[in-house]
Image 1 (tube, rainbow, N blue to C red):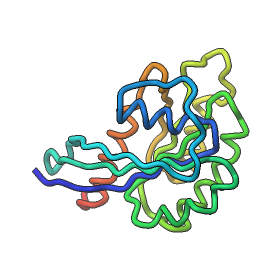
Image 2: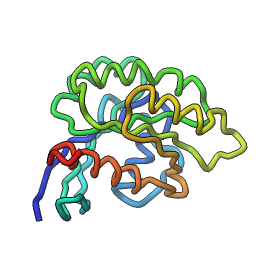
Image 3: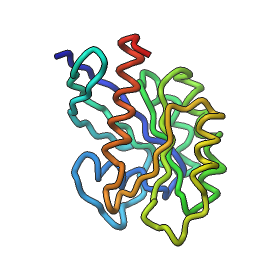
Length: 178
């Protein structure tokens, strides 16, 4: 069983739930009012992922970037060496969706050819939803991303799936099976 250490970036506008998603994935908890990330936060977690070449043990080094405009300049520097990225927006806030091309450009300026998963957060807020799945899937294809997933950090829905899918995409790229 091979082991890898893979750097993952979580990026997107402020307030979309990036830190809540990271906390749900790494600690299994949901914190209602997380504090704004100042600059960047870091977590590491070990997981197992299956590929066509067998099971792999992966340590994900996950970098959670503050989404506020004043922190955006640091993102490209931290992107260097990344194996994959999660690009988040809030399903209830169209402005967060409209800002995604800028975030994508920041990531691709340093790592142009990594798997990127588009994630719509706060799927549990059904009555407040403003972005429909079809539009998000259309943009995911248009932007050449590896997938689109809707999540809820509150319920835990699809959180593990996001990191599992990204891990498989990164491994396939590294091992040349994609």
